[in-house]
Length: 277
Image (cartoon, rainbow, N blue to C red; front, side, top):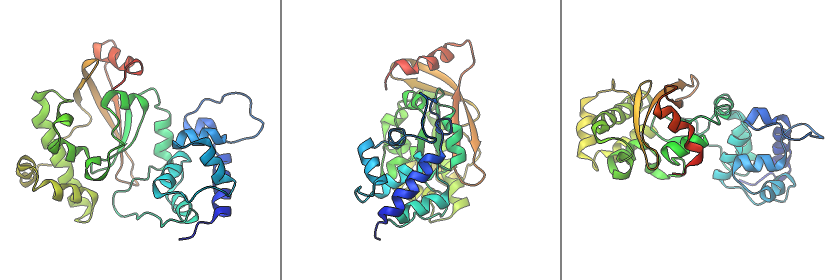
């Protein structure tokens, strides 16, 4: 598809000027001569250089990739219809909307923007992490950089020991059953062409343990809304509660990690900003 440089520039500028810093979790900053976000603020939210973004708005930028357009859609808090429009203006086919998607809707984005000081993340039903706050990255590591099947924590759990080592050995059986059960429930609900079914089909020949759990059809074990123990590489054992918010219009879940005030784990969560993973 051919890129519509004029249309893309106009659409980006229109959506940027419609957003205020508070809409995307940014402080108001110094007095602004015009409304909306600054170009450098959008570039920061999206993870691109200010020069790259500026050239897009000036109709002289490069042909953006699908990954770059997806990042722009998240940074500008676009709806699904707006995201699809952005892709077409950028000369790319709009992503499919079947089952599980990577697009985080504006409502969920507004919530997570207001949780910038809290470990929180958005995941889909296959265990792919779509978005994390900085404290969440400090707590569990950057889970958004994985590609392919490794995007799913369920896949990594059964194939990579490093994933399991972030949790006490006594909890491994519970996590394994929960990951298998979540995949089983999602694959049944979303069908054989879903992302969850893809992950499960890949795991069956690779992991005898997963294959055994898969046959049990146990979908009752959960990892959320309960106490979870994490082994942080610098802070050691941290006990957190994992609360969830389900987006009724999609299969995405917002996970928020908290700890009981006054406990050692609560103090450790407060120290996350000072440590690196």
